[in-house]
View 1 (cartoon, rainbow, N blue to C red):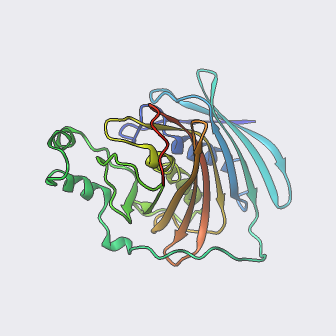
View 2 (spheres, rainbow, N blue to C red):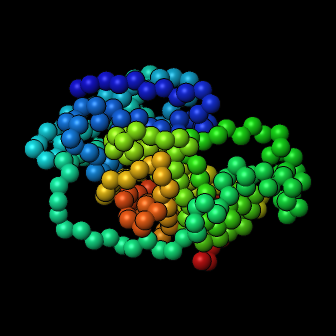
View 3 (cartoon, helix red, strand yellow):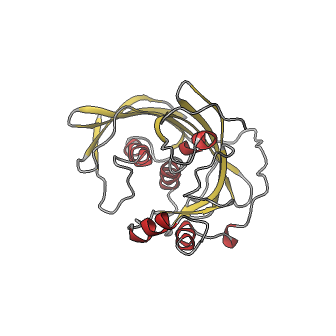
Length: 280
């Protein structure tokens, strides 16, 4: 077993506790260090057990479950103060040739013609449709820049809490260039996969004046082909069902050229006051 230490850097986007994407990407980074560098992660399956403290280091224990000629498996357990926060199973494979097919990428707006989230937030300050109280609150708030640039295909209305269809599309990429290390690009995609996906499941149930939050329970990612996380990836997310207080989402990442490279499945606990069932 090997141990690795992860920290939450000052200025890192947070949500009151350690961001789930941070746990996934740091756990995957630790697992990467224990396998043959010719092997790349092809899938990971993780569970969030407890909130992480932003001010404490995270210890990642990497267990070598299996080392084969073409497949290796690792179990990673993340702890703070000796208590488990997060567990992840990851499988690694040496690249090989085989049969191929994939679902074509639906049409989507050109990311170069879309506004960044930062510019969208700036536009709210002078938008008369945004309530004055919310514009004042936004003007006083400190926006912490994300390491991932996001451009929404449809208007992303932070202040519109009306019920809507449980799906969204947006383009993502890192703000800076990365090395050619494919393992690094997969860690970045794993981080990005948890940014906005879980909240999609609450869209049909949200109402004005009602606070709904989604806390991740489990998160799985499949990496199908090599890609570059510092180039635009289209992330398409939908939630086919919410039940028993849990929201279920499915996501796909496509390259700009239309290749399906990553699939994501998540389930989260939806917390908030119950309302009558929404009709889609």
